[in-house]
Length: 55
Image (tube, rainbow, N blue to C red; front, side):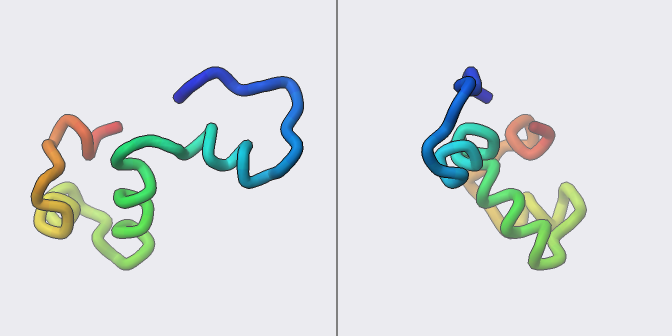
């Protein structure tokens, strides 16, 4: 996660700074869809490594 600013003009900018990144949104989406185990995430996102899943 990057450095957070003291002030934000928009809550979406804050949300992006908190959960932004290459894999975080895809992982969260899949967890919300019910893929809540490492093996399920690995099958749902085949290009991700196990190291990335454990972020």
